[in-house]
Length: 365
Figure 1 (cartoon, rainbow, N blue to C red):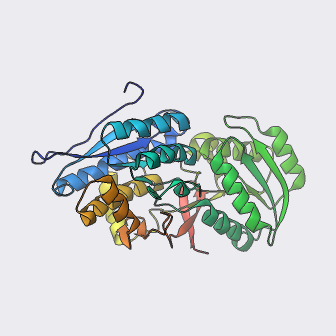
Figure 2: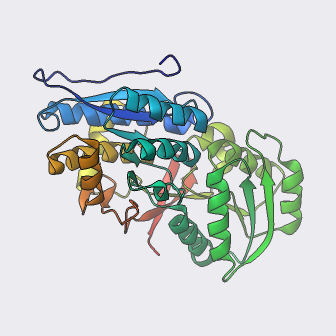
Figure 3: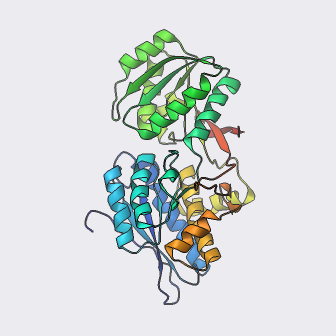
């Protein structure tokens, strides 16, 4: 399979046949800055699992695939994972990548857990598809309520990346809820990989909205905020969970004072999570990102499901995952609904400050 980078991670155990798990994230391309950390988190989780005896007394082996930041390569990676014997697949981060994987894995009847993809349609692909993050329907409502209630915004402009399913979807859910009490002044759009947003921002400057909502990933969002501040636009900027610490690389300190959502933050943790952060940062440099914490939870949840099922057969894993109730992960309790979505998961509102993303408040509608 020359199209993919395939790596394995096995901690020495007695000579039992390993349980193979596919790990699919972006190691290259535009999604890599917030996706590649998933490989580190998966290896860390597999190492812990294997050091305590593996799963069903068998070692866990990770098959790593680079989806190269495209849906096509994501689908090919999913197919390759199955061909290499994966009994379950973890990934991806961007929703368009996960959706391409889900269609292939549902057809192959191989369970999949996405740590980070929020597109509502993802788990509707079929009964083998799960996620441990919130959905955009939930996120859009929380962010709209935060804008209206906490930021006291009464007027807003929404800027959408028309090349992103994530951006298009979250834009719609936010707008629907914001308009119940607020006024949408304008909806602008732009394309992925754009770097000059002056025409669009000139319109924003004239409208003077209380809030500018940019439901996109880190690169274009950061460029938009940086250029807006250069133009003297003083509106508050708000984004979703696609905004990460990588924003500073592209926007510098211009992003300070902006708000975003996240399903986890090291500053709002249980004792279990604090211990995880300590262990993880001893092996990996830099602050722990939410994608890393959710990927870690996905591996441990999968191990728990196999132990409960007493089997590593895909059909047994799928059934056990569907029956998950109150699994205690580092990102909180996980219980799946009938669609494979977690219920009662909190959403955190973070604010960019000079030190990075700081916890602003915990929100549940």
